[in-house]
Structures are given as structure tokens and as C-alpha cells.
Length: 228
Image (cartoon, rainbow, N blue to C red):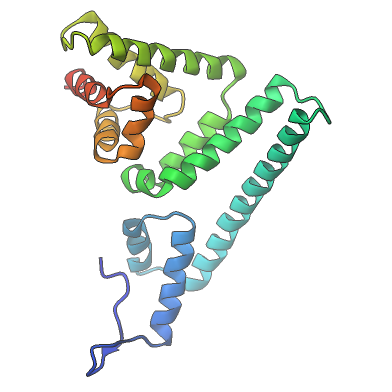
């Protein structure tokens, strides 16, 4: 992607970087530590109005937000440990809030870079915010839809008829499940997601393990059938 070019290459084929390039490398590493995709970093740094000072200030703000999020997670983990040990009693609402924050953090660690490359940082930020604001009722509804989706995929595997009412139900359930967290649903984005399920086994394995059988290709094909 040519984000960083050496100042020169010497006779031994060693790349030489001057102070300007080292500063640029530092800037790139700051962005990468915040899970910015390389394409997005290049776009930012190629902007003729790019200011290193302004970028550093913005990165500091983002890191402070990350720090606050980590501190909240640590607090929730400590509270959960104390709850398990009988030192205090957490309400169901408190447990759900702690779980949601932990889940967002886990997803960021596992998939943050990939999903930002596909959907952009702002979309993922909005999705995480929507998920974190789910009510207890909505959260349980989301879980019930997912359980029904997995059961229907297992049943569909016995007779994978793409024109059947069961196939249509699988599409609608997956769409409904996504709409609990997606800022905006589109058929193009839905196809892109199931493509990622197929291309990256980490995503597809989630469904396969839930069903205890390979069902991810079926989900992919159903979504493609009903997003024509």
C-alpha cells in the first residue's frame, strides 16, 4: 500500500529512513494501535490538510476513551468476581451491562480490524453503541432469535430447499438479529457479512459450533437467495 517509503536504499539494499519518515511511522503505529485499517490510515495521511499535531490530539482523545472503556471493564470484572465469591450481590441488570461491555471488548480484540476495513470505524462505533444500549427485554429477544435461527438451520440442512418457507424464515431471523445492533440494514451489507463468514473461519465457526455441525454455507446461500 506504500504507506511508508524509505528515504533511500543503500548499496547493501538496506532501507534508510530519515526523521520525517520515522515520525510518519510513529503516526501510523498510533493509528494501528487504535484498530484503524491501513486503507483508512492512508486516506487520512494523504489528505493535503493533514496535520500531525491535530492528528496526535485526536489520537489522544481516542486513547482516553479506550482507557475509560478498559477501566469500566476492569471494574465490571472485579464486581463480577465479588458477586461469584458472595462478597456482594449484582442485579440482573448490572450483570447484563457487564456482559455487554465484555462482549464488545472481546469482539474488538478478535474482529476489530477486519470489520472496520469492511464497514468503517464510524459504523462499528454506532453498532457497539446500539448494542450497549439494548434493554434487558431486547437482549433476551435477540438471544431467542439466534437460538431459533440455529435450530432452523439444523432442520434446513435435512432438506435445503431455497424456495421453502423455512429458508425464508432463516433469512428473516438473521436480518432481524442483525437489526438489533446494525445502525442501518442493507442487502449489500448483509451479503458482505455472510461473505466474511465464509472467507474467515473465525466468523463462520461461531455458527458451526453453535449448531455442532457445518451450517455456515447454508446461511450464506439463504441470505444470497433472499437479497437478490
